[in-house]
Image (cartoon, rainbow, N blue to C red; front, side, top):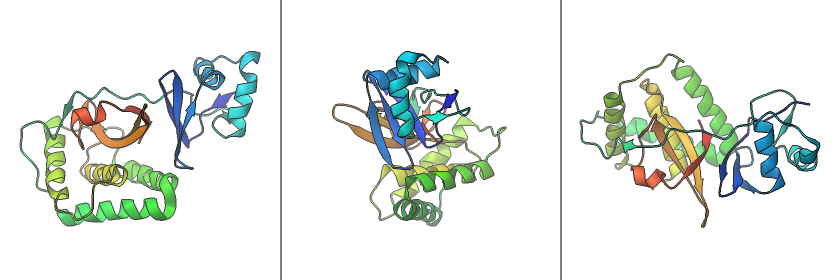
Length: 219
């Protein structure tokens, strides 16, 4: 039988195990031992009797799907090498009211509908606002990100990485910039962070902020 990664699950190999994000349940999970071996084997296209017990456990928990579907592979992301917020250059003026609307919408959806439904809505926004052929000038993306950051400080809400990243991504998509939202984790102690990146360029944070996190989800 074929197996696939359910659409609500994404993961990365980290610290000798695998960290999964279940966006429907809004929780991170740490897999070790035989269950990590299942991800490695299925990702390589191998199914053996040795992995069946652990595979059954993962299937019952809806962490692995039965039948054909998306391949079982960890999230990949370009290594961040620079940040728009750390490079000198012009800023494109941004409207605080537009930013406030996107930030408030993201925060309310997360609170009322949860992470899974909010991500689904943002996927629809991205698909509607961008095309597969969308290209953008790096300098333009940096100018827009710097303008957003300058306007964001005018808002009264404290920074929260998930709604702020979703708001910035929507702002970028409206301007044809295909920024990607990443959720990443680090271990010992466990911490999670969200940020926006375009290729190797971070658009929401300094490079050293995201360098400690391994991406486990990409939008």
